[in-house]
Amino acid sequence: MQAVANKKLIRKFLLGFGSFAVFQNMGFYMIAAVLMPQRLKDIGISNPDALLGTISAAGAMISLFVNVFVGAMSDQTRSRLGKRTPWYLAGGLISAISFYCIGIPSTGLGVLIAYSFANIGQNMMTAPIVATISDVVPEKNRGLISAAYGGGITVGQAMGTLLGSILIFNTKSGFFIAAILYTLASVLAFVFLPKEEATTDSFEKKDNIFKVLVYSFTPPIKNSRDFWLAFTCRTSLIVAYQMIAAYQLYILENYIGQTKQVSASIISMMSIITMIVAFGATVVSGPLSDKIGRRKPPIIISCILYGIGILMPLIFPSILGMLLFAGIAGLGYGMYMAVDQALNIDVLPNKKDAGKDLGFLNIASCAGQAVGAGITSTIVTVTGSYTVVFPVAIFITLIAVVSVWRIKGVR
Image 1 (cartoon, helix red, strand yellow):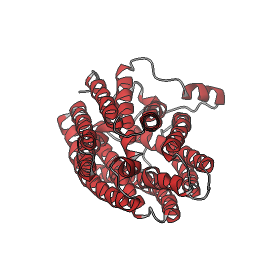
Image 2: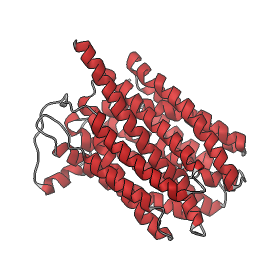
Image 3: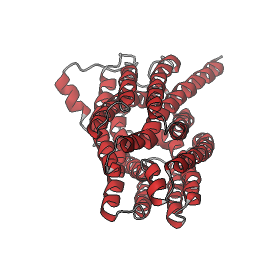
């Protein structure tokens, strides 16, 4: 009976974390990768490449504060049995309204403001969800659940980009659909995630807001070498990923030389390719990581594959190069996301501070978005071309490889 109960619980974990990741990332990437860049062109922005970098950076900087603070508050507002307050419900509502509002303003400033509020909401969603994995998922199943969450992210990204490319000529409908997807993500997480007690010790609340703020922004220091190496790995890979992903519409139009309509079709094909290979990678990599008891080899291989994928558009500045990028980089990115959360939890210095410390690790995603978009924007502004973007992204991917290689406490 205990084995049956455990299997039912694992199924709930898979459904809860997986569905949340799919719908949240569908909503985000249909906006960030396709519809928002197109919106900037539709409202007549003269230099959309530079403004997109500014908007991405602003949203990411706001996310740095929100992710860490909400992660810490998620720790502080737990019951003595470790159950977390569902901050993600409020975050889903804020995100839904804000992402819909991106399609309303006719100025770049209006888009920036709406996108900034959207980032507040989505980080209110992500921080407590990720911390919950540390709370309730047994160590022996973390690779599997990490694969479900990471697989949901990669599939959601691909499906969102595909849906965005379909709606590129009807962006207002796209922004409305993104709002629905964010609402679904938060509601499904609330419905399906088990209301289980934490596997760690009981927790006490700290009511003094000043102490909460100090606690929120105190990074882990003691026994944290592996933690910061994992942080560096994640930041570097997200930077490299964002350098290409956030600008793929502009790369296809300005680097490859395709029209808006052809670019939308190519993005659709890339999304399908990425979805297939990334999903296959996550299905295999996460459970395999649990079985062999190792996290580092799949991540190292994934980073190398991602770097090879980035090389393809540089060697073949054509539709073929972009499709090869989608296939090879998508495979590597899927492998990484399958093991990412399991590695992050394994390197936590103190499980009782999981929400706060995972909030710092989630800064890697936020910082990666800001830095990646900023690097690409700067390179294009200075050189007038996307050619240099690819070797820079490859070099940054190699930093990720070295960082994870140096982690000692996790095999």
